[in-house]
Structures are given as structure tokens and as C-alpha cells.
Length: 265
Image (cartoon, rainbow, N blue to C red):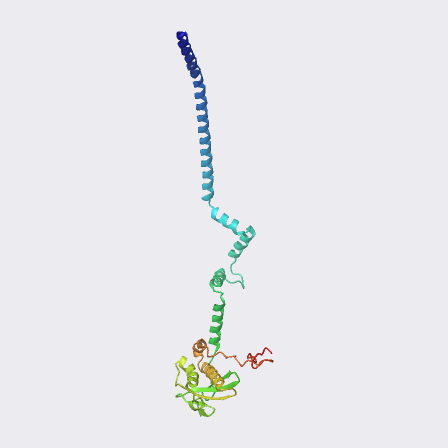
């Protein structure tokens, strides 16, 4: 019994070995076919990639590549190109400036700044160039100044610093030192202190209003005497008329804004 069992096991093992030997060739063939198929697919893919790369390189290195892309992206039509070619070929046409001048004008317009400050500065320069010295037959320049209810008429001329207000010396007419310093500031800003004689008449308003009116008149007279002094006076604000006036009284109030005392009962 034991011998038969051992022999049976050996016979079964032999059969399994035979089955394994029979199946190995088929599996090997399948494996080889799969590998060959994968190699073929990889080769086809590589060839396609090479062909695509070659096409792209031809497009990138083509003679009309850059110009063609520029036209396509900018929306320029063939009619526009023909018109530009015709304009380029125009020569010696009466009334038509040379193409170089047209290009220069276009470049200047593009490079010019269009900011509001730049335009205002150019206008001020043109106005300054148009200004001329305005003096009478006696060599005097005139300026009118106003402040609140005061009106001042001022004449200046070259001299040694004499200052007359309503036929009085200005230190007698304006005893307060700050008022006299305010009147001399236009000369201080322009470095002309003591180089001009001033004669003025002023009427209306109070002391501070008259001081402001005379200062504005002096500034305008200096500008008329020497237009080159305008930038210094303008920068200091001495050519601007102060438009502030007393606010009117309102009905139902003690003054412009002051109210009466409120009582509950």
C-alpha cells in the first residue's frame, strides 16, 4: 500500500511537469508578441513626435513667420497693407509733406506729455513771453489792489525806498510794525527792498483791509514794471486777490452764526 502511494505521487508529479512543459512555449510566445507590439507602438509614437517637432520647427523658422503673426494679431487687412505701400511710393505730390516729416510729427505727438499740469505750464510760459513792461512817461508802473471793502491805487518807480500812503509816510499811516512788514513783503521776496519809491492812495475798509489792498497793488505794479518777477510773486501768493469778506447776518441770529441764549421756558 505504501509503495503504491509513493508511486502514485511520483506519477502525478510527472504529469504536472509535463503540463508545465506543454504550457511554457505558448506563454513565451504571447510574451514575445506583447513585447514586439509595445516596441512597435513606441516606435510609431516616436516617429509621430519627430514629425510634429519637424513641422513646428519649420513653422517657427519660416521666412514669413514673424510678419504673418504680427498681421494676424493686429487685425491689419490686405487693403490696409496696399494703402500703406501706395503711401510709401508717393513722391513729389504738391501739397503733401514728405513721409519723414509726417513720421516726425507723429513721434512728437506720441512723446509729448498730455498731463494737465504740463499744458498749464506751457500756457503760462506763452503768457509770460507775451507780457511786456508797462510804464508811463514818468517811468512809473501802476497796480490796483482790493481787499474786503478797501481799494488801493499804487504807483512804483525806481528810487531809494520812499513810501507814501495818502500823502503820509507809511510808518505814520500804519503805526503797527506787522502791517508795515506785510507791505514790504513783495519787495523782500523779489530782493528789491529799498530799490523802489511807492506812492499809493487807499480808501474804504479798515486797517487790515487797506494793508491787503496795498500789498496786492504793489505786487501787480512790480509785475508790470518787471514781468520777470511774476514767478516769485505768484509762488508766494501775492498776486491772488483775497476774496474773503464778512459773512452776512442771518435772520433769527445775533450775527452771522451766533445764536441768542436759549431758554427752555
